[in-house]
Image (cartoon, rainbow, N blue to C red):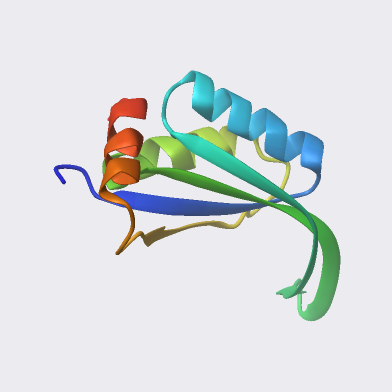
Amino acid sequence: MAKKPIIIMVMCASRKEARRIADRLLIKRLVACANIVSGVESKFWWEGKIDSASETLLMMKTVKANFKKVEAAVLSLHSYEIPEIIAAPITAGSKSYFSWIEKSVRA
């Protein structure tokens, strides 16, 4: 496995925003796949107090080498002042799925 697979998670203000970001990253072949999960209730600290929001989770599979490009694209497209953009390694999974991710993206 030459390129390490990762999952990048981004909380979005709406399903529409998540779709727009996913479409752009897929077109640029920076991610192999995107999953959009609506109806996430988020609680967080913001401007000195606990706040909450109804958000949409965007989960994208790619390779570690693409993280900085994905991050830059999300920052340019996202409506939040400080969007959540986090990545985690995918430590186990189907070898054929990992191969598909690697073949589907440009790193």
